[in-house]
Picture: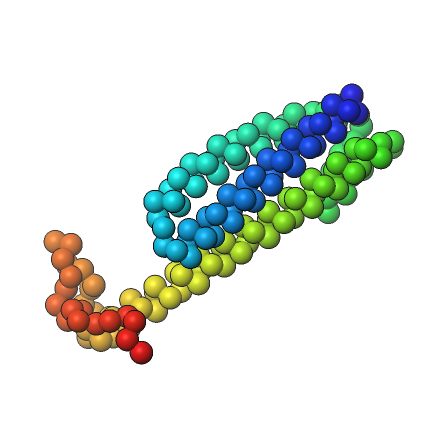
Length: 153
């Protein structure tokens, strides 16, 4: 039973690491503005995430059968913790933390892009008189925003 849990922990760690690699690819695509790649990565992230959910459920059932559980800070709790299980658990927790940090970094990159976009829209609105929208109801650019370069310094 313990060997089966170790194998489950290893598979889950591999899944978490695969998700982390997708996050790194996503971050690169965001930086490049490659929206096609982002769409494909989202599909792959959903697939990996679903697989991880199944792995977590299986691992939790195995842990419960052995009288083990995860503590609030990620520590492994139980009366008898096998050294191999403990080592596999530490690897999983490390991979999960690295992936969590990668996800937080992606969030920060996205926030920076959104902040820049909002500032650019505000600058365009100020240049066009404030109340004029960027696009009319027909989807065409409203008068007053033509010829403005966001790259001009």
